[in-house]
Length: 415
Image 1: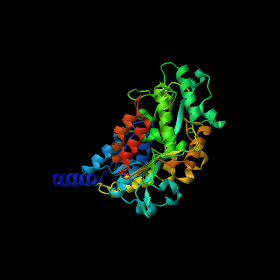
Image 2: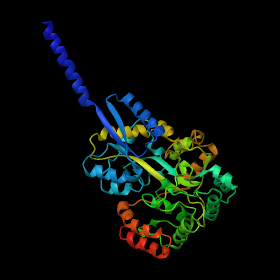
Image 3: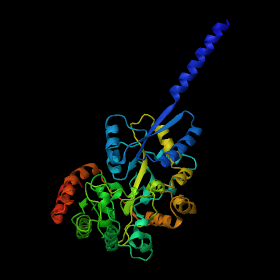
């Protein structure tokens, strides 16, 4: 009898365990960061979700930023989308128009204490169509100048933060100090494009800040902006800095600001996580102004759930958890928030351990005044069409005017 009872108990236990395993949900979320500090923070948020949902496990999958959108597209096309993903602003229109993203609105608005209205309406512009919510911004991050204070001191130059405070940090001064930095720091560069990818995956990010400083844009209202007078002036200045001044890291060369080989670069505050290992004194400052005045550029990324994912309900609940006021405040140390209550709180200005409150004020001001990087539903096709024409531009003997016209001729059909 005991043996029979023991057998029944063992069977019941096995059934219970198998049922529990069957009920367990494993969420896969793609991110493009491999930063130990970022992943530690994200895993802590995942653990706080698991505390309320014991059967849910969240695994973060790092995909390199340069291949991120392409690999995400392949996963979706192959029928294996992640449950949750970070999505860049330039990819949003294509995924939204293809009806690949879940409407998060009902879940978010039904979540107790979520306060959906706390999100800035301009920040939601790319991610909401009417009542349909395709994504929630977790990072509304302005482009900033990172600078190597030691290299500026060696050259006897005021740094960008000091120049900005005096109202003298403009595109002309940017070119002037870049050239002087190279002269004073042999073997180094004055400036490196964003992530060292300004000639490839980040080519629009290389063009956009100076073009906007001159009062133009790369495209808007389905029209190419590269061949407009403002953009032409900005591009010619960049070309001169690369090939005449030799102050910008040229094509085929790795400058690597974070290793001390370039005096300046453009990036966002999430990259501050790399600075403790840099080995030099540094700071951040606004982008240079120009004839177009102050023109902060905002890069944005949101959390999305794929409509054909395996765990859409739980995935949407995890997005609600990640973007609660509490967790947005936690992420704000690396990823500037779209929640007004967090952005306006003193804790945001004073809460970053790596960036001084004075510098964080530049971040907050840029978010308030800036415009998002332009997106387009055909962004991958536009970038593919641009690439060979941009390659032709970045040559010493390039006919810059002709190359610019070729860029517009290539992308206009896609716009």
